[in-house]
Amino acid sequence: MRLATFAAAALVFAGSAVASGNGASDAPGRWWQPGEGRVMPAELDYENDRGVLRTVLIDGPMETAGHPFFEPIGPDGRACVTCHQPADAMALSARSARERWDATGGRDPLFAAYDGSNCPILPQGQRASHSLLLDRGLIRIQRPWPVTKWNGRPVTPDFTIDVVRDPNGCNSAPGYGPDAGNISVYRRPRPVANMKYLLAVGFPFDPKQGLALPRDPDTGRMMSGNLTADNRTGSLRLQMDDAARTHLAFAQRLTPEQRDRIRDFEMRVFTAQQSGPGGAADSDGASGGPAVLRDSAAGALGSIGVPVWSEFEAWEHMSDAEKAKLTPEQIAFRESVARGARTFREKMFLITDTSGINTPIGFGNPVRNSCVFCHNMTRMGNDVAPGQVDLGTTTLPFADPWDDLPLFRITCLKQPHPYYGRVIYTYDPGFALTTGRCADVGKITLQSMRGLSARAPYFSNGLAKDLRGVVDYYERRYNIGYTEQEKQDLVNLMSML
Image (cartoon, rainbow, N blue to C red):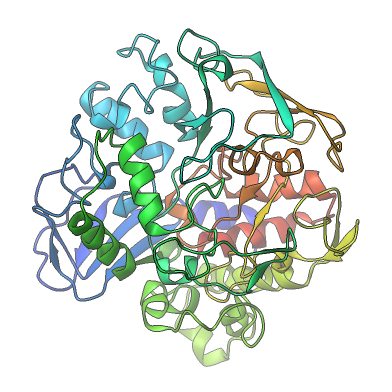
């Protein structure tokens, strides 16, 4: 089977919606507009260019009228659903942003000046003023400088930050930037689904830093650190308050009742790719798609017991009877996905100069391992070990040279960074904007791998426009030595998650 056949098969679907289960009579449109009062079905399918994404809701269907996740409770018509769309695996794709711009002439609340544009000082009616959202799927995140903790207590950073280049003005114009007490970075919205896995704690400490895990100020339980790219909010309550203040422009916090209803919904919604191109998966996605995520215990974490993506092993050794039910293209696709899963687990390479892996507590530099070293949670692919990692996606010399993002110069005041030295150039300091530590520059929270086909582009800053771009970045960064077949197999695997 030639590689081109897989690419051709992936174009079968055009991107319409299909509703199923529990009384949804008409297929809902892709875009969920705040306040329109739809019913959220118990099971909802959306086609994408790699197959069908499915979202399931425990105890669904659910009326969204009056629900704080779906209602425009902010002053500008936005709701949580604006940036967490069911068709985009409860996140936001750049494709959806472009479609919404074209449909509304840029007047949708998604493009609110304060974070849906490159900067509020720009002319808001122009597409160029929203290019980072439209082309890369990025939302502006404004962090305080100097660093403050979640409770507002100041942190004295052990580095200085200077703005080298500011193409959009939000790090140098009056009222913006370090001199004004803030720093603007640009990041992808993260999915708000499959939460019982994201909140699960696999270790009682952060093995990437050798520190005890922080505890939820409300419950005293350890926090997983998987909710935001820079781990500025460790619990759902803190994340909701942060989002309400920054992305919904609330003057006041959410009420306890609103928080409870949002949390209840987010804990009940699960999403994953359900089938592949041309029905290649026979509605049989990774472990059966989101239904298995819904029904499985979150405590079964990691590669101890069930290795990640091992559910695809059967596709590599199908019986003649199984093959007789499939087309040659479907057989070849399934076998490719199974090989991709094996490559993901077994292809060893040297991981070098990566903060959060090679330092500080003894993994070694380099350390020899495979993708599962960090992407090891059964059925999910995120890391069971809490903590942030610097893959180089936001920091020179590893990140692509972009001229549409701000460039910062970080100068370490105490110890130099173990791999970048005393002076670092980065598009996003990442976790360092939460801790104030130079050693954390560039560290980002690892993502879940479910629903990838629905939410391009990838990495926190949209560095990879498609799944092949993800594989190519790792190949460049670590000189892995993938063959072309292995690269295609990995793409096909990720498309099925």
